[in-house]
Image (cartoon, rainbow, N blue to C red; front, top):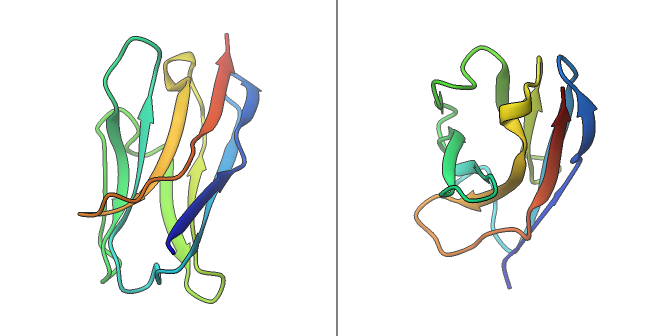
Length: 113
């Protein structure tokens, strides 16, 4: 059974940082593309960052230069380091295995102005 469990969300002030974690079980993050999405109230879910099985990364324009996606194969965990957070980053953040139907339950990130 595949499970993805996100953690690390919370309330932070503008300019602050958070690191989200996505612990995977039942599937190796090292041989799958992994991605972070987010969904703000009243908006569609959008791609934030992705990392391929080869380590190539890509980011939404809105987070380029502020967010970093990475993975720890030994811990089977994917991370999203978020720096210089802005109120518009407020959303529920989800991790997923690319091209799969597996999603985590989400973690809330709230950035106060």
